[in-house]
Image: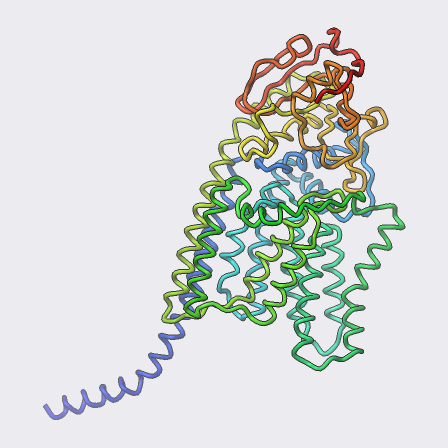
Length: 550
């Protein structure tokens, strides 16, 4: 019995001595398991976000179809399948990511598959880049993956701005690399990495390069507040940061390239609208709900002292806020530029956020709320994606009714405002006829200084020269023009539309034939109607201009 008590005493003593180690291990495991839980949840949700790419032929985003049509023509350039209505002119345009990459991938697969892979890879860059930036700042992954998934289908990305999305993903990795290399004693590695990223970003998208430059500039500005100002170091820093960009701008100017057109437009009224409508390009209701939930969550965390933004993060957040306020809506013929600033802020600022554990409950609450919002967002987005599969198949089937080398114009029904979230993705569907039937479609984006694709001389007078005119005109405008009521402000490509084009695609729900003496209905689908324009009709002749009563 004495030996048994001795044995228990030794065991008890060993257990008591082990308790501090066990406590340290449990705390460490708790930290690891929380980080591991976030990694697993982000990974699973991201896989769910990517899964529909395998089940849809065409992604229903506003500009995605336009990208697909253009890249199909680029891939066919120089072959017997080339479209005679379009010329390919390569210059140093700072918006070429998909144009350079996807035609090369299309040597191994279809253009449709190659473009979906490019889109999927862009999303991979966004999520992994946000996580990499947070790991570089905080040493661990805490919230950035969740933030990236929350904004993965924001209003800008849901427009199908593929080059911008790809560029932002590269920019996130570039920012993480800049911060990682800034402690090097010399400048060589940082200059080489920075130059490489600047070249890639410049070719990908100019405004993605702007997000990168703004972020590292604000980061370095914040760092100046924590150390004595060194004029020599500052001069070297500015030279390293700006030098590669200035060289590329010079090469672009000499080569005849351009960033875009000269038009600049401010729209202060939309500054309050975009944050409300930002989180989902398909559902305003979800965007408002999700924003309200996130504001409440942040307020609760802040009230309980469970969330904090680092000093550098405050500099960056303030810099993005001021840039958003100052940024015009339209710059270089590119619309909704201020929304792109919100994209950068939403992906970068979370890397500087800390959520204090307080027993683990606030991190758990944040994880649950964010996961629920992401899941709801994915349900909305993917339901819209799947709802368009039939529509695009019907659109492609309608191309078989077109004569080869036809001229095709698109318009919208008056009931379709042009911003209807359920109808808008089909607007640019007719541009696919440029490849399928070698047609000319003015809505295929060929704005000078923006793309390597331009209209051939035979159709140059029908080319759209103002970016705002790519939004489909209402059918009532076509009716007025056909009746001779023409305004100087009407788009030039429509002023003699009945004589210039062979077919009309009218997007929106089916309505009675708006011009039965001029148009013959060929096909009706749920979201568009195809008409043949009768050139033997008196209404198809060049209209005589009447007094505009609109």
